[in-house]
Image (tube, rainbow, N blue to C red):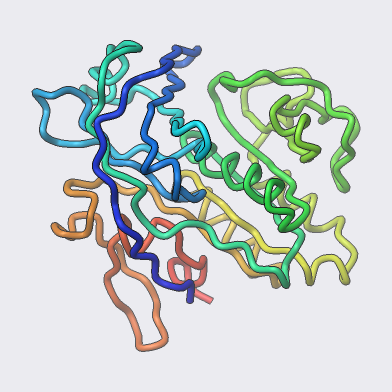
Length: 291
């Protein structure tokens, strides 16, 4: 079981530095929040009050954090009234922010080959994790992302080969390519260089192409819709590799007080209810989907 994570949660009024709209109702938001940025880890989130008049906050996964510059960044999609109000906020406005919250991803040194799988709004923590693994020289990540919407990042044909995938599946994120991290994209919407299908199909092909000695060094990290996570957990069982998943759940307080985000998990002591906000959002896959 992953170690508990109970670092302090910081409350800040952060100035919006940048706020850009992308196709598909997606927004890239950068907020000055030095206390949060100083300790934020991949897999954690911030709980944001979208306007001063709306007390109910919205949880947003962290996409990036720059401790030296003091800002944090989020990628979100407008899905309801709250995120629509957030989309109307402008640079120079201030946001009431609580963060970072939750248990982050925890790479293990005995598994230096990381397979990172992100789907839809689950992509941000996966990219954050890939960047941190590279910064800390903790391994050799490979990143697969799936989305039916246009990817809100610059893309480029990759110069980095990925075992098990056809040469024509070569479109990658420029951000990852610049870091020397192999990445590939999947979508059911036909696009040149993008795998036509599910992101878990890319994951399966990559796992199947690994030498048994290399497979023993693999650990999977995934964030996305529940069916995608269940499919990734099944791949982890099939190939005998450990897997961490980050759950998405509706939240009220976001700090463990209301237990509105509790989900059933398997523990050594038997079935239990755990709060996604503070006991997660990252869990070992076998805790959520069984051994």
